[in-house]
Image 1 (cartoon, rainbow, N blue to C red):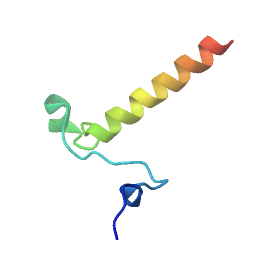
Image 2 (image 1 turned 90 degrees about the vertical axis):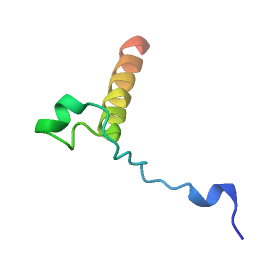
Image 3 (image 1 turned 135 degrees about the vertical axis):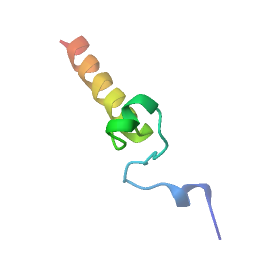
Image 4 (image 1 turned 180 degrees about the vertical axis):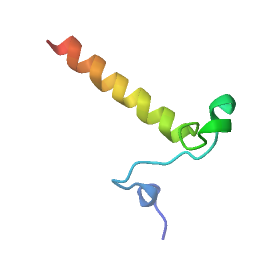
Length: 53
């Protein structure tokens, strides 16, 4: 039996689609959606910690 929670895990999701075609020419790994999501998450965490002080 399948439930909606079956796909949930503690591992981060990975997006392998390319979001920056110019960057993909020289660095296809950094041009992937997952890397962009990591960058936004780091920026959000940094912003949150700065606003807490």
